[in-house]
Amino acid sequence: MSQPRIAHVGCGYWGKNLARNFAELGALEAIVDDHRETAERISEATGARIASLNEVLADPAIDGISFATPAETHAALALRALESGKHVYVEKPVALSPGDAETLIEVAARHDRRLMVGHLLQYHPIFRKMREMVRSGAIGALSYVYSNRMSLGKFRVEENVLWSFAPHDVSMILSLVDADCTGVTAQGAAIVTPGIEDWALLQLRFANGLKGHIQTSWLHPFKEQRLVAIGSEGMLVFEDSAPEWDNKLRLYRHRIDRDGPVPVPHPAAAEAIVVEKSEPLRNECQHFLDCIANGAAPLTDGAEGLAVLNVLRRASDALASAS
Image (cartoon, rainbow, N blue to C red; front, side, top):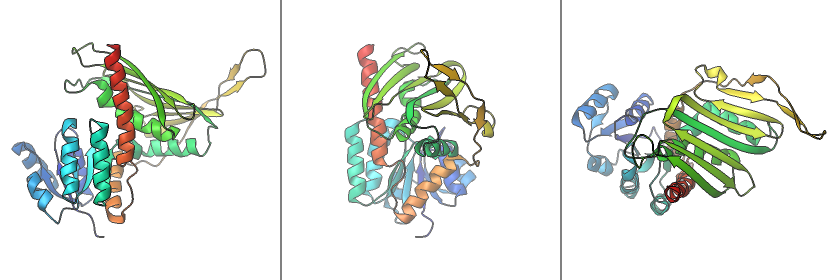
């Protein structure tokens, strides 16, 4: 198959980055945005024509459509596109209800279309290396995994910090643990805007006995994006907020002496794990194009999106019951 042709829908805060990447990959055919000035600006920057959603759905030259629209629109828009025979990339979350996500998965399979969810950090080369090291046993048996994703703002009023921040970390942790999540508890606090949690803590249990947690906040004095995997023979830290690329992934070969009456730690110096640099969003967009071209299932396909959504829904229900 020749280079797939893509239409992108939603050119706002994040959507403009998707449009830019598909354009730089030579795949962007058209853009759709209800705000005319935004559409004109992105069209001028990318060279893509401005079209309506109905036009791109009916255009046989368009192979796939990417959506970066409000979360509550994802399921309906993705369904229209799949039923029109288009491959679909949709920003996280894939839908707001598991039932809608299951419908999208079924329709994509029935039409033999690729359905991909925008879990960006799965395409970060640092995380890819971390996952490779965990799965290869570089830190022994995985014992525990946790993440902190915190910063000062950007404050939202349409969704809480759970839905805004946690999908990234849920996706990565599910990938590292590689087991069904069997239990979710959560607590949070709405401090700035009533009813909108600015801070949330999720605790996860897995079918293989592992546990983990995710802490999210946009009411934090500084930016912290840290994913930690604790193993029987070492620890890995993905520090995405580290300013220098070569310091983003570190291996600690700490040893715990358990022979005496009290366990004694023997700390080791951090080892920087050097990974070839590339832009995660570019990798993600290229992966979508490759999956359209070769018929492969995306790494973050509908099933992966549903697994993440199920954790988020259970966490959201736990937050509601705790308030």
